[in-house]
Length: 287
Image 1 (tube, rainbow, N blue to C red):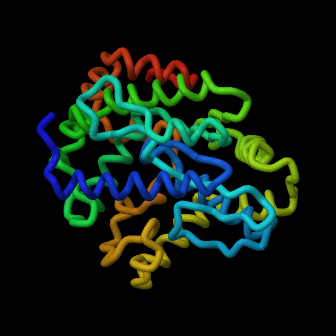
Image 2: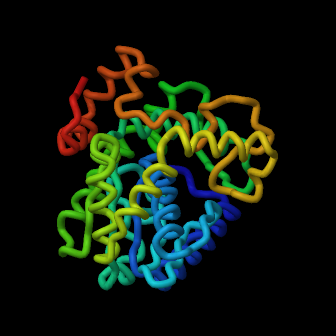
Image 3: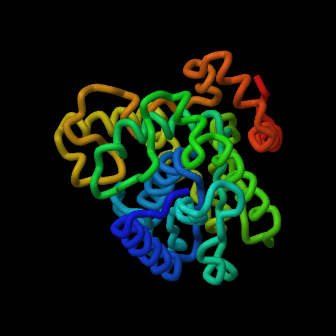
């Protein structure tokens, strides 16, 4: 990989320093690769904390500071995504995680790479505040094959995340997007119980309603159409042109990659051993 430009390196250093501080001041750390469902989990927990703990619902922060409930920070900075391609990214914040409860969220890499492509095409390519060297969004197929952003590297990261979760103590919960999708009540209830033993059924029901795909997408459309996206930062699209693929809450599907990857791309993807291995570990069909 070519060296990073100096301004990008400095931006990454500032971001990692900010993440380190957030982790230090939090009880629970939620770790995921981009486009794995973090917005969904954060939206649900924000709604739960408001109903159960009186914490105002706020979508612009990467940290939920509970009043009586544990504080939760959401990060995608667990691995250095700018490390040399592609094998062994270094683990960041390891010294901070030993006394934290950690939630690791994973998803089928085929769905991740499709969602990541649409997000990068709509939000990253022209954003000077979030420079992405080596980013090519000229086509989905080229993005899938990218050494930096492509599916093989994503699958290797996911494998490392899963290995990490399985190697830790009982203070770690491994969650998959697919399980959350298939059994929302049971999986989200288990998530809340992992964070706090004092679980409210009423708050859980309300949070699940507010974190339904329909409710979340409707709210993001309202934010985008109302010209208020700059105040939310993590949801909504400024100057939205009506393209639903540019939304954070895009489709909310399991296996949606099948509608966007051609047969040849799907065959090529499965030729990758890391992809096959992660798909099997997630109990997802190869086809």
